Length: 119
Image (cartoon, rainbow, N blue to C red; front, side, top):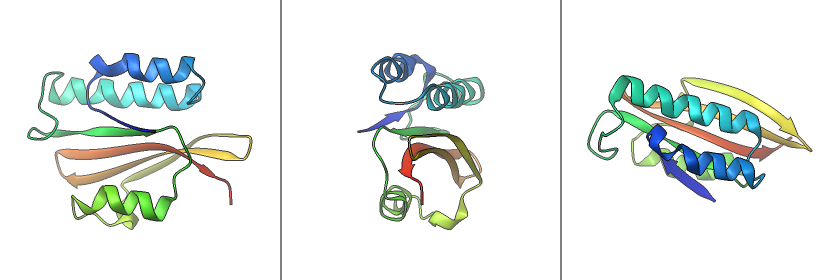
């Protein structure tokens, strides 16, 4: 499952995934932090498709990094190799949870939080 979020007003969706054990606490904490930051600097009532700020894509299933990330970033003409910030949030039972930030413009970022299998 992939969920597109852009405001803290949608935090209940993150909390629901956490309660259903579809994401770990570390991923939920990072997601809520990203949403809070977007609201703080760009406003909670912005139009995600037309205003500055960006959004968060939160995945609940393992991502084939090259394929999925390229597909998401193609719309913004951003190469997968151009990540601004990459974090490993946690590792649970052979699955690594990552957070990756891409900047499409100086005022539009895409944060992806996703699990992937350890290599």
